[in-house]
Length: 177
Figure 1: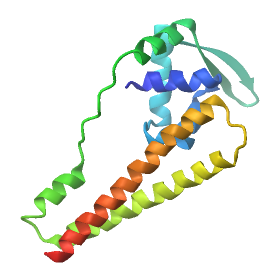
Figure 2: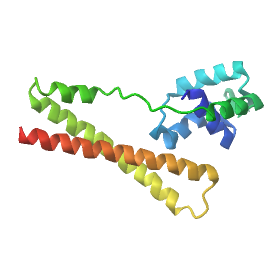
Figure 3: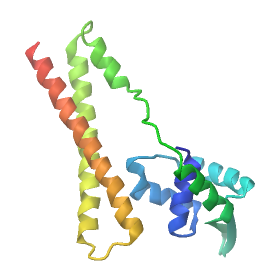
Figure 4: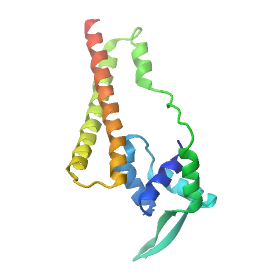
């Protein structure tokens, strides 16, 4: 998946500034696709050159004009083209798995410390995602976009829970050794 397709999807919901798009990444899309504000602005510039987005300049007092981006017909067509393609699983490239593998040859205290650290990080994300899920469930009439965002959030919750379970499993094995 390209960053451009994620941005196009966000813009389908509502025209947005680059800053607003980055906030959407922080608030919802971030559980499956991360991008910095700088990456988003660079991608928006490329997308404008391709004709996928256009912007409206909105004057601001004492600041440069704010650009509000809109998906164009060409951008919608690109999203439709991409949407029709099959998706492939993302290959795993995870340093912690290599560290676990190396654990057979190195002292385990370092690995145990890292597993606890990583477990804590996944736990914090899980709590954040579960809070977002509770907010969604409290909304009696979510929009279509909110419903689909909730479905991606559910995947994020399961991802974080799977990491926590795996860390616990590895820690249990290490305690036996």
